[in-house]
Amino acid sequence: MSFPAPTVNNRADSTEPRVPSPQEKYGSLPSNAAMTIEVEDWFHDDLLSRAVEPGSWDTLELRVDRAADRMLTQMAHHGAASTCFILGWCAEKKPALVKRIAAAGHEIACHGYGHLPVSVLKPHEFKRDAERAKKLLEDLTGMPVRGYRAPAFSITDWAIDVLQSLGFEYDSSTFARPARIHNANLRGLSDGAPVVQLRKGFHEIGVSCGSFLGRCTPWSGGYLRLSPYLFFRAGVKKTLRAAGPFVFAIRSWETDHGQPRVAGLKRSHAFRHYVNLARGERGFNNLLRDFNWTTLGDLLARSKPDGPPTQSPSAA
Ligand SMILES: [Zn+2]
Image (spheres, rainbow, N blue to C red):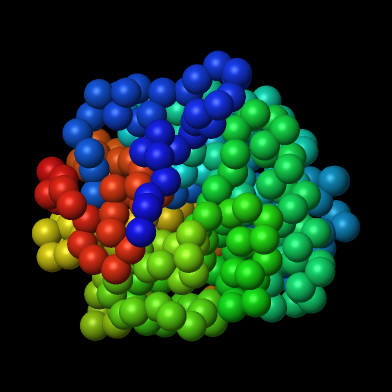
């Protein structure tokens, strides 16, 4: 099995200005912790989708750039690299933001265009949505987009075939362990293995899980906001020390505590969307401080498809 080149954002034969790899840019040691950010606006959360129709998005306050820019500043301060799964709709509205993310050395990846779950799309509709977003991002950055994350973690087997036909090399729309919130439906995953080769030349990279009140749950932005930070950090360290790697997922609006409040949501949905948004930004900053972060592309390049990564965990 051959692996992609370790410089995830670079096209070897390109005449475009070369973007340094995370290690070149930040001089940090190889990390077993990957930071992933879904760059989308506050109204793109699927929990709000019944109250906020896509047809109304153009009338709403756009805040994705201010939230993402604060995250970029914090990551630069701590020398962290990330993979940014950018929603095509946002890339179209805020092209300069996409360029700033790429220029800062982060991996540009794709979150589709219209934020519709794969389960409501036919294959040709899914292909059109993913292709449109990929092309937008590649045209803006001049770099190949290799990674995809489905809205609401809703990936399914036929969608992997479509992604591979479009030139994607990995998907990150599942959790590394069976979790309570799990919309994906993929064959070939092995419980607990965060990096799995699904097809020749195509990998699945699962978001890490931890134990919360005795239940396996995604150890991502929602639980970062919900749980005490030291408890959350202990869960990250446990994963890194036990098996690694650790893959963290957060949505950019989870750090935007000034976002508008939508009325009429189900109480449980309102709780999950709005709980402790101020703690989200603080927790994100603390994670940047406490661990070395890299991109999924970098992690994949240094990982064996069905075994542990070759380097030591990097827990603080
Ligand atoms: Zn999303």
